[in-house]
Image (cartoon, rainbow, N blue to C red; front, side, top):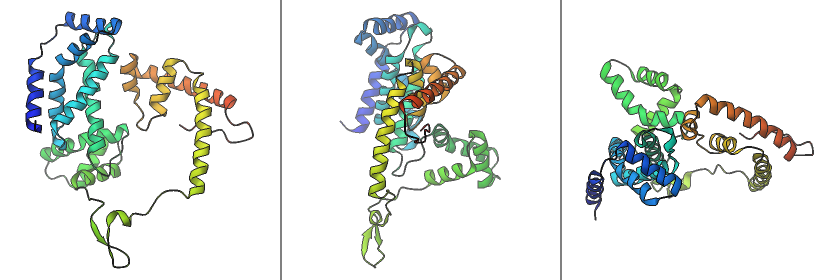
Length: 291
């Protein structure tokens, strides 16, 4: 089955799924949550495949296969089904939309370029909104200079002008293969990959870093046992991942306000500092929070 046939098959399957009324959706969600009814979960997920396809269509401009976007969106849909709390009295589509979009955006960021852009929340917002805002500004006033357009976008998204200029250049240029033939320093033919300088530390510094890292991870694991489940989840999501979840994202997940998430995070960090003072270095070594 080729890609186009697969797309049509998935779309046909999604359009054939029945809509769920609020009462039926609630009943299925309770059966999945309380009884681990896999069939109930599957029925909820299948009924919302239209939402996945509609969202995938919005991201087609990034040049990735529609089928892949749909599959990634479906992963987000299943994650939403696993986390959905019927007691919140929110329609599943409202809750699932965030997970579907996040899953697709992460996939796009992973596959967009050989040299990937930043993955912070601000960089994600810039990546997914730059072209839309550029087109809107150019359409509103075609006399704006490149500098003025970039400045407007930077102000709208709360990022630096340099970030906007860098991302615009990245999105406007094609990737260069590391196997591109180039002329070496001695006049010999070589590849772009061979011309790159290593940015690795010397071996002795690498070993020292590994040992120090393992020691700190052990201290941190012990300190984390002093936190309750919610505090641990917030610290792990906010401080111990590369991306770092936003207060709003965690608030949605935990069913609390982002201000409440911030308060819990502040309290948890204070508890960690006290715990690290107990579990951490004992011989005059500097004690610094690594997050």
